[in-house]
Structures are given as C-alpha cells and as structure tokens.
Image (cartoon, rainbow, N blue to C red; front, side, top):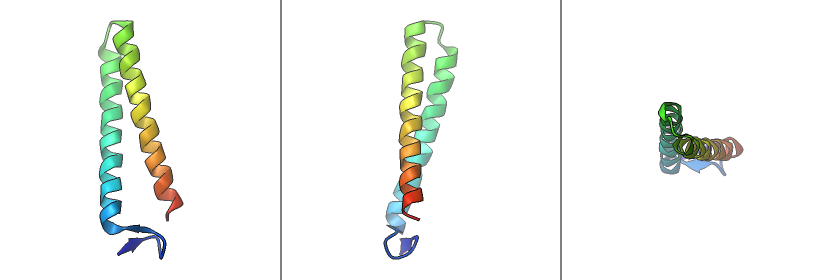
Length: 69
C-alpha cells in the first residue's frame, strides 16, 4: 500500500519515516534541555549545535514527506 497515490511512499517506509521524525524531535528536545542546564559555555554550545542538527534532520524528513503526498 502506498501513501499519497501512485508515486507515494509505501506503508512500511512511511512507518520508518514517522519513527525517525519522532526520534529526531525527541533528540532535539533533549539537547535543548541539556543546553539550558549546562553552565559551561562549551557544553552549552555543543548541546545547542546537536539540537540544531536534529531539528534540521526533522525538517528535512518532514519536507520529504510533504513532497511525496
């Protein structure tokens, strides 16, 4: 079964993408929480960069899904 018509995403692949979206969202949130809790600027910066990376991955996957509706 496909999502979004003839050239859409198969159901199994859609489930994988949904899992990845959820995991990237969780990772971004955790990194944001850690960044807020660190006192050391270097650790805060590192955690913020990781949060940004996970947000970008999330948005990239979301764009991919939107393009294949």
